[in-house]
Image 1: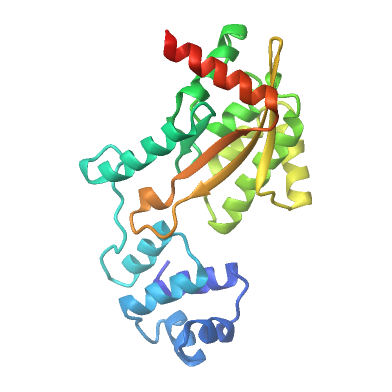
Image 2: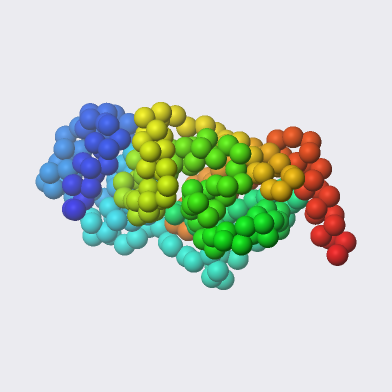
Length: 265
């Protein structure tokens, strides 16, 4: 799509009229119309301003700039590159400070790129009891796969619906995102029906309660998802941090004891 088509797509996707976009971006309605019809070529700063107003994901902002003949404004640096050392150090501090409670760092597609020892404790305990436990490093697959957390989550359906709802919401905010993984997840038993429920309910919670039942232990968590503020690197912008906090005293004491025993060994 050319720049005009992309602008029109995102404007309509955000349910804004040309007048709405003009008023919010501080330009004339006529100028928005001329950009969309390719009668006027926007400056780089104008494109960035319109992207800010439309709250377009930064990976898509580069696509709009490219369509208008400009170089990328936002970098995409692999997290293991030297330029990302400060980001990695920050994430490692966050991982360490969250101990003895679990934490994972996720990428754009919800793949786990970093995790702490407390999260490993959960997965290792499950794998010891269930050797068929999946080797997937995608948190959505871990939740929804019959060989993932499903057997060990007392409130699996609640967690599954919330997970699907978040995936669908992110797909709505950035068309094309999660298309492949959502299709794959719907092949798991019962997930297609839950996906419909998630679509119908259309509400988003700020956190999820997750209750793991492993052997004689039931560990109850409240989980949250957070991200960085306004980074200009695509990798940093797309990182999400999922933190697990104990929802009862038993979970807190169990994890603190397990952490102390691990350190002593």
